[in-house]
Image 1 (cartoon, chains in turn orange, yellow, purple):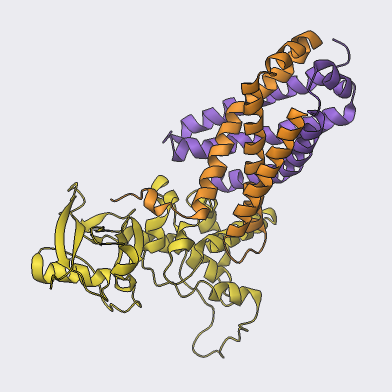
Image 2: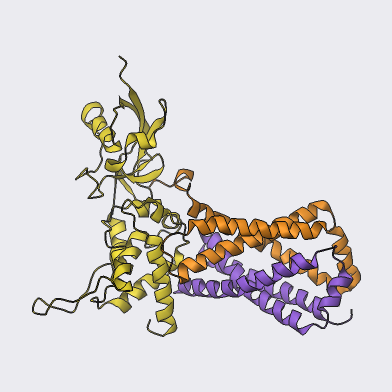
Amino acid sequence: MRRNDHRAHGHPSWWAFWLHRVSGLLLALFLPLHFLALGQALRGPGALEGFLRFADAPLVKLAEWGLVTLLALHLTGGVRLLLIEFGRASDLRKNWIAGGIGVAFATGLAFALSLLS
Amino acid sequence: MQDKTLDVRIWRGQGPDDGGRFVDYTVPRLDSQTVLDVVTHVQRVLDPTLSYRFACRVGMCGSCAMSVNGQARWTCRTHVAKVVGGDGDVLEIAPLANLPVVKDLATDMTGFFDKWARARGQFQGAQTRQDDFARVSPATPERQAADAGIECIGCGVCYGSCDVVQWRPDFLGPAALNRAWTLVNDVRDTARTDRLRAVAGDAGCHSCHTQGSCTERCPKGIAPTLAIAGLKRTVARAAVKGEL
Amino acid sequence: MAQARRWYWQRISAMVLALCVVLHLAGMVWAVRGGLSAAEILSRTQGNLLFAGFYTVFVLACAVHVPIGLVSIAREWWRWSPMAAAWFARIVTAALLLLGLRAVWGAYAPGA
């Protein structure tokens, strides 16, 4: 049987699905590392401080911004899904996709500004 | 004067075991021309061995559904000008995705309708011809929900557009679930519990990821995504109440 | 019915997480100002029952929500068998609970 390719995927709701899934996957990969890093505190404040100084590197700061943005994206996309599934949406709420992305990047920006302060 | 031509690639395959391949044809390009016109021209003038389905050719029956440039459409309602840009662009015509291919552009819809039955997509009533007519107000939320989905003619475009159908071969699919939703909202129907159980199984509504390709492509403007969301809610509520 | 259960628990945990994540992100945007130091963090979290309670709920919700999402990906995109995906989910759940609760304890436990 024939399979669909990217030409069947070129619409906002599909991209919202893809973004939600990929952001979730990346966050799932990150989360254990996040827990491990915080768990360093068990070795005393020195161990945690050592990790935080490593995290001062610009590349790490960029990654942190990326993760905050991914989390915010996953959140807003998820809220849209919850509203479609539990609310009484009359369409696919594509405007919420745009709004959600906007809010997510605004959150990332707020975080970036805090980081740089 | 040079008559304009259109380059077409049409999927040819002898059956489900034949890998199949695209074959190129050149047809006259006309000002007002549908994709079905193109297929018809190829079969009547260029290659009588081409197999395809159509019936009404006016956008009522859904028989002519095919994959046009990778998107499921009714070919009788798709103007070539809409899917082909400038000269030199190729029009690609293939059978609907996610269905076994019988031959060329004709797919086997058996599985599609089997899933319709598995989702309990049939009305079951308690009245007989001796009883009075049922009185159903069109204004109630239930009837509006049902009316939003009952125009489905089972063309298969939504089913052919859904990734979850491709990833999970058992998934009942948008059309069957949409039909189940219209019946769940039919106050005359007496098979509600059985139907909710049917759509709550592992192949049921909970596998839908709200990709929305079905809603995006439905030629009748139905939103199976929302019907499936309704089923998810209704099944959850019934399960929590212990009805299932 | 397993899909229905998965869907249900993922949506419930999603609602919990929506709240937790909003609070967490707000907190992080606020906390990260002027740089982070272990002393700063620990001074806020050690002995703080509210902190521990909130993040315990957060970890539990993650431990429910993340494996269910991963199972879908494993079955649909990576074509894993139902059994492989189920074991994957169990391992991820255990890992998140272990590492997450350890992290909460690490930040809460007074004096180190």
